[in-house]
Image 1 (cartoon, one colour):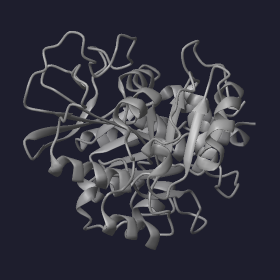
Image 2 (tube, helix red, strand yellow):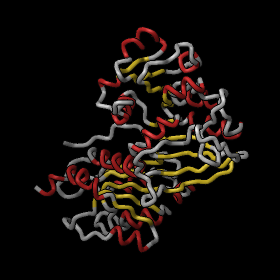
Image 3 (cartoon, one colour):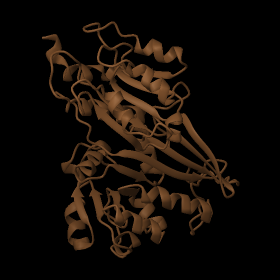
Image 4 (cartoon, one colour):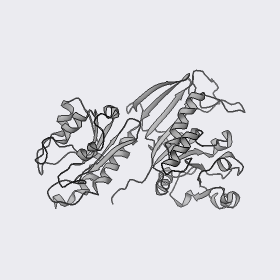
Length: 380
């Protein structure tokens, strides 16, 4: 069966002390960052469609989960979006206070994913304050939680394309161990907590990114007196490559060329442009179409990634410059592809051409069957 891209791009955001604690054991919430970093987080929130937390965070911190800046809210409205992202909470116990700021503060859609049979009682108690989704109906989650993949699929159906996960520890651990985080924003505060009973950033678990599978560091930035480290995880490559494969399904059919999709993504996880073969003309290639939609002088190209469902061509009869060379000329230094081009029409050496030009090439052969499926008619 064809796999379908059906989840948002997931950004996980957290702040910790130098010794890895999210909080201490005092009654009041531990303040880990200052106004400068809170403004940065506000900007991240403004770029997302929804913000997700766990029920413990809602009870402990009583977060408003709103965009604080009036200018950013106005910009969202001007772009045809609601002033604030949707608020999302996960709960199993159903122990949620209808008077919490999550339910009462600001104009925003509110979604509660309730597991363990708590949904009916929550619907009655919350009334119109939130939409309660029975998470048990979405999928078979773990005994102490919800099926996160099913929740993400449901959010995608509701129009959420970029999701910000703000914790807490249990939720961050669940998303990270499930391999469902595309980007991690980690702020480190310049002090120690030192309390063994305080909550750490994550709990124990089997994480996809262990010592042998390091995350890709995209940015280190001083923000006031804290340090932001932004990491891109392997899930991000999977996310965008699947989007490229889905784009390839839109290609006008032909028996003389491959159906290919391509997406150019900047180093903040935002799409710069996309395209698919023959989208704008009978001979255009996907990478060519995507690059034509970006100003060649755009400085983001130097740190962008090209995702292509098929190996970029190294020779073509329809254009004097093959796609591998177009990518090199654009200044893109990283390419991720699903499927090496079979020697059906030409003998392709796009990977070699790119690597010879010091472009990093990442191959994801586990996704090659999806790209080949779109082109199955060429091999009948």
